[in-house]
Length: 231
Image (cartoon, rainbow, N blue to C red; front, side, top):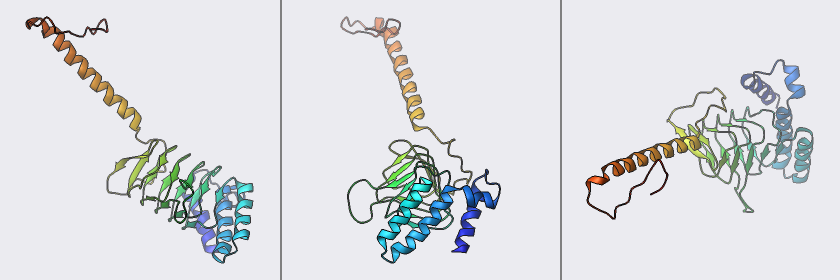
């Protein structure tokens, strides 16, 4: 238990540049408090003391704003930064060296029984406000962008953004461990740029038809006047 606690504290220093001292981390980091309370609750849960386990988890939720169901399975060195509004469901599974920011939900999609929460691989980063829902798997070394809603499995070494979440990077190698949750591709902007290019191409084709129309002896053919915006 004490070995795990030391690893948890070291994980905070490794991934949070604001951490200054061990005393400060132990005293003020709500993510750390919620994780330690979960470990106690999980021990009771595995021994079938379900009510006591849930009481401990709800007490931790009251003091930290982080709700971790005692039935969840969490690996080593989980780092929950800030943590307010984080929810981790009963059948969720989290690997080692995972980073979770505030407002993240690892939830289900309905009232189904059995495995209904996501499985998160090792070294995964889930940015602020992201929702990972259902019995899906997020592969190792992946990043989930801020505000994304992930409903489908994510391959390893991938970056997911958007609503619904879409894989925008998958290069077959481990992503840089820079914890940069802002500088991610914007699929919406890319789609807008593509539409603009198609509009310009169509305008050019219409202009060519208009300029070449007089050479055809077809009185029924109409041409688009780009300057007036009408046929």
